[in-house]
Image (cartoon, rainbow, N blue to C red; front, side, top):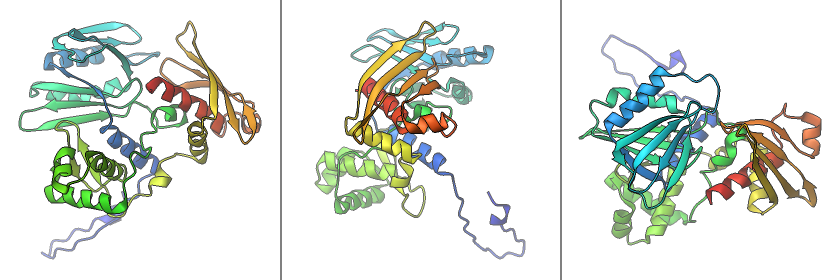
Length: 341
């Protein structure tokens, strides 16, 4: 932030100065992805404050030197929530917190040390609501403080780079809604400040699907935020001018090309195999412009790419010094979508 952006006076005059602060596209892209992720279906359960205290206690007492560094959730219907800390396999059985879902889940999340942000809220919290989107995807922890709530959103990645891009194509367009309908929905939300989609649909006499499509578009544009605790949308404009969504959607031209390859069903014959060290070997075939390429990836237990190869000319000339080729990204993206489908 430019120090010149602040003026101080003591003579009683009140001057207002507005300063533009430029943020890198990667920061804005990550923010929009996590914000959009709040609107996606999630596995939800409650944690008793004592159970959250046990999580923080383990994080305070132990510091991992090697991976994997994930927090693994074992969720069985009607059973206490069970959490396992890798790589030590320390287990926390949350006897005060039952999972009320209809089917079992095993979900791994990363960024667990950031949960210590919640430590000071434990004495004040009635409960912690946890929303898990899936392995490696964003997770949200909501501290219910009675008259207030505090939401902690964890992106699920350490750095938003190509090796994790396959998991976070959260800015993909949803239901197409015309501009007039989108504007009606947005103006209706601004009049109420916050509202549930059902209420807006009834008020505006629009289908619920159209309202959700419009709200999803404005969430991606940084104009609306979803309150995951109360299940309502709030009008909250990130900036005055509309964000260039087409520019922010992909981190590079190769990532955009990879997304188009996957959308065109250009990736097939995917083979996934785990090594004794719990790494994942991915191989596949990518068809592009009448040619066939054979990318391969080695992904460690922390979901980081440690080795990669491809038969294309870009890889032969640059190896990985200029990042991955679009065929590698397409293979990772296609495999991730297959897992999530």
